[in-house]
Image 1 (spheres, rainbow, N blue to C red):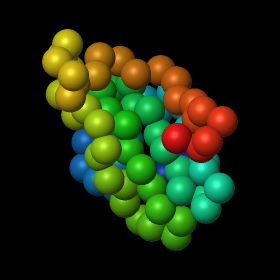
Image 2 (cartoon, rainbow, N blue to C red):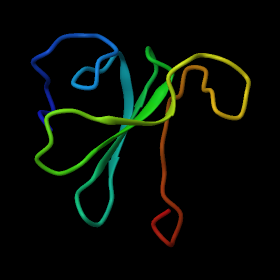
Image 3 (cartoon, rainbow, N blue to C red):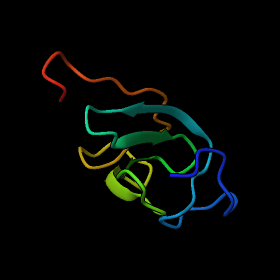
Length: 78
């Protein structure tokens, strides 16, 4: 994952819009909260694009997010 980015703002798999939080797990997978895209993406080590694991459309349903701002893991790494 290129931390600074080179594909500009957007909602494609290789872009983010207003990332507000990023955390890495024990195997160096990075999770990013994107305020502008209303989604959480997962970036595997050495990948050039992320995978949307939650959200993507703003809303109040269980599968939607509205302006996510932070991420955290519990003690078990979940």
